[in-house]
Length: 129
Image (tube, rainbow, N blue to C red; front, side, top):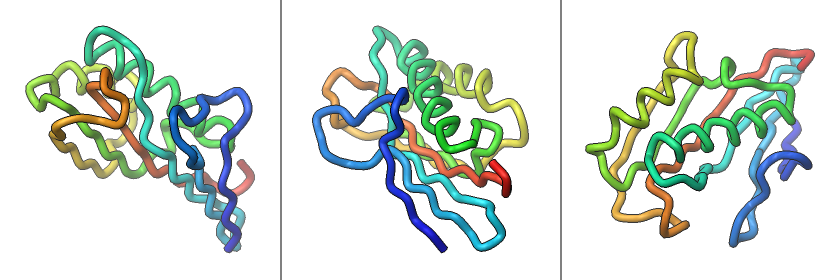
């Protein structure tokens, strides 16, 4: 097993902190698990922020040969669970296949004060990508 920690060029860079955006765990058969740090985005509404979050996740996964179709687990943090329907509508636009495992939490605040949604994912990428 080989582990690579990365902040891919061209993908969103860590803001206000020191951490890796992606942990790639390669298996002996050439497949890999991608653990992507929580993403936030700018926007006035949960829907706008959610769209930016999924675009960032897509860019980070793509940098390692993955895509949103490879997501097997997702964790969502909302500052207001009442906005779940807004977030869910955007999520369904980006995650169109079989639904991954999922956990959603309401939290009092996120690392970035204006953020209302943060999402982290795990993706399983087949060998050869």
